Image 1 (tube, rainbow, N blue to C red):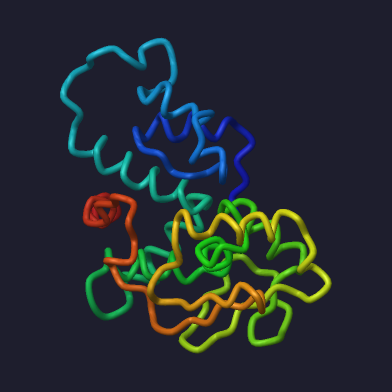
Image 2 (cartoon, rainbow, N blue to C red):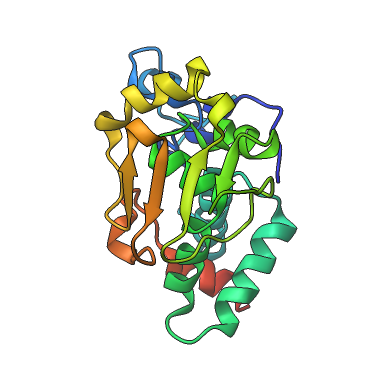
Amino acid sequence: MGRNTGASCRMCRRERLKLFLKGDRCYSDKCAFERRSFPPGQHGQARGRKPSDYFIQLREKQKVKRMYGMYESQFLNTFREADRQKGVTGENLLRLLERRLDNVVYRAGFASSRNQARQLVRHNHVRVNGRKVNIPSFKVSVNDEITIKEKSRNLALINDSLEAVARRGVPGWMELDPQAYKAVIKSMPERDHITIPIQEQLIVELYSK
């Protein structure tokens, strides 16, 4: 899984979109993007030339890749898997990204960010159908049960995240039981479950060149 050691807020500003990379801070008035929504750097506010089609496509790919916290090779492999599947490639890509275990842990409310969710998975706090799974890229399936290990249920970061889950909501393709620290996958994620503005067709066009 890709690990970014730079400033997360700079990535949001670079993509001109709040990517919710820092959990609760992104919902507060401390969010740097709210104060400075222009790109970072000396020429961040300068009016440049009209961006090329390639630039627009690249920025869309970078935005989605950073949102899910992936290396380029991981993202490209996921795209190739989506391209091999039947249906619309762009929607297949987003569906595969949403099915990642670290994303599911985040979307269910057990973590306040995907980065935090990745750490929970890596550190063996998560169970899938009762079995330990510590691979963030693991793809969940319908009827899978994602739970928090019993000994980990007193962790403050997990309980704080569950208390705040009402603010961002739980997607319709999963069902959360916060008392049991359990989320059940009811169906595969659909395109309308992804609320952050993504133009996946631009990514398809970029990789199809």
